[in-house]
Image (tube, rainbow, N blue to C red; front, side):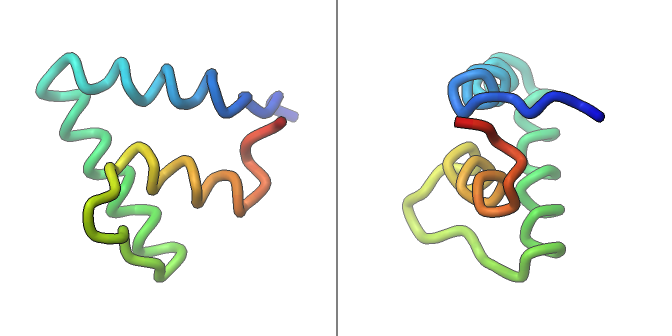
Length: 64
């Protein structure tokens, strides 16, 4: 079983993706995937990172 990442670890990882064009594209693809699987759209004004972290936390994929 994979060890869950902490909120800070996952946030840092996602923020590092912003440094490159492919990383930003991956971030948007991941947000789109989460939308399809959860059915919850990203609130206006919220970043893709915040959206992903909230959904991962709701799914129990982020440890305290």
